[in-house]
Length: 359
Image (cartoon, rainbow, N blue to C red):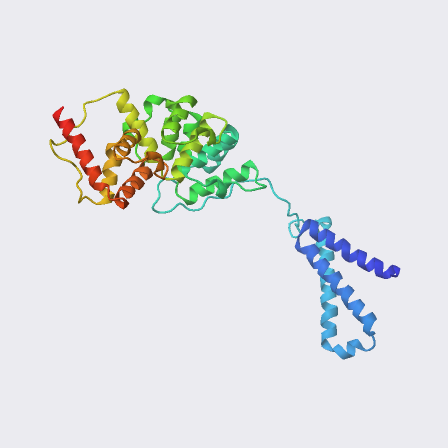
């Protein structure tokens, strides 16, 4: 390798490094020009220069013009800042200071996205909430953590992605309320009573209700009653534990189990006169569809009472598959149907009803 070839390769390498570092059009044109010139020069040395201009004809002038024009364009772009043409040749592509992108127009059918100041909301989340609080915001607005968090994202990126999700899903109002409730939590007396909670109650309300009304020991007791291993629920704080417990229940469609237990516990703590059943009437018969039998048992009996019913029918309740009250009872009824024991169940319930009426 002679010195001239080394200098040519060094020139191409220098343009390549500059283009890789800056990634702008000026150094791209320069790299393309010097690389083409090097290839053309190498081809002429290998095949001989001879009468290449005569052989190529007009095309030779095109090649020379392109090389000359590319070199001139690169030189002008390179010298423009020195000559005072900064606006024309601005090539700085480094990341500017982060500013919030303009929000997309709100959907016509949504009124939750109106009158929400994105910049103010961003500042509240960024400077007044902790990373744990942001996880709670994701839960409150129904955002999937995998859609918001990603490797390499800083806190600003995560907040913007959360706000974009809320904007696109029409939940900016919910996000603003969730931020406000995080900064100024409602006192327990302003939260719904247990009797007012349903499966359709917003997740944020469920989360605040559990945090405000129960301590960690009581939450562990609740988890045990609905057959959940509290130690397997992740989280180092009560807020994180509650959030993960609710996520566990939502993902398995078991929120009804928590609701049933809380409402039954409240009823036991504050007993009220039971609603009388029609005398001598059994709500189910042997002709009642299996699905209705299961629904009746779910509504009328808790897990402890269902264990007693299974025992009376010589069935080991622990052998019934499924987690949670609803699934367990549904599988229990299917087990009775397969083993032709539904008639025994109806007779047992009819006997219990008769005893209640006699008392």
